Image (cartoon, rainbow, N blue to C red):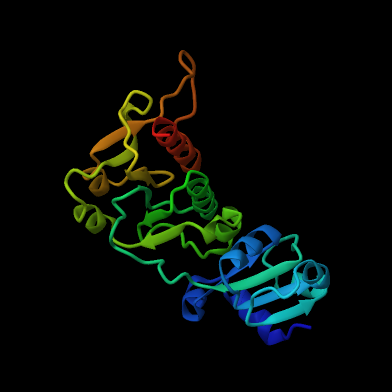
Length: 251
């Protein structure tokens, strides 16, 4: 049984201001909740008996058993998936210092939650542990972002802040790449095993101020010669192609 007050509290976490006040975010479904539980303790788990039977003694401060109807009342999904959990914010979700020892991503105003969640999943797949985000980028704890990561949020850290300041603190010889329509063919450019890959806003690309700080301008070429083609690629798709080429080149 779940109380009306608890239902109201969980649903309030749809809003960023309430998540920030409580320092909690919502995760739903076997995959996402399972990945997060493997990396730490939940604040609260709301689950059906079927899920609880398959997951005895999950690490949590509060465990609430519910039936399917009760789960529907609290779930943000159209089709609830047996379990919903609240997790505390990650302690290291803010930093103004870019890791200069490995390959990282930087997002300049990626606003669609689905795109951000997919990019986090892509970063996880290609072994990229840090993503640096402008304050205009979608909130990592937005339920739609969390869901789209399919659990990768447990392994990839996002850092929000002033991108210009982050870039200006980097060593002058540190490789900074940016994907741009007027860039050089990514398949013909030298790519390093470490560095920073900047991806821009869905509609406007990389902003002018950030663009001034890009040392290596890259472009994913179109192969539809002689006919009309798409104006650009979705930012998550472009991120996947770019990360794949960096890893292929330096494997």
